[in-house]
Length: 131
Image (cartoon, rainbow, N blue to C red):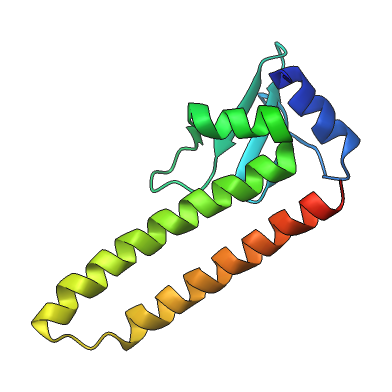
């Protein structure tokens, strides 16, 4: 299995634009920040948070990056985020539908999220075909 250093090597080998900041080097792709600090530490962060700070990806998400690479890991993280949003929105629709609210905006938002989920699955399929 790969190590975090291999993830950074994959970033360098990719055509993604590496940026620099006061902490080191980083790239942001599909809502994921992969960062190599000046001391050599590699971090994989989720940029799609409700807070103003990025969060470390969880163990399962990191395992996806280690096993299948940066593109697969990024797309799977995107799916996790979108499916969480969809679940939250479905619960809102269910609660408000009981009360008789107009659901047109929420249903349109749900349709947008479902379209993004399909597009992300299509990107994953492309990754598998290109191997």
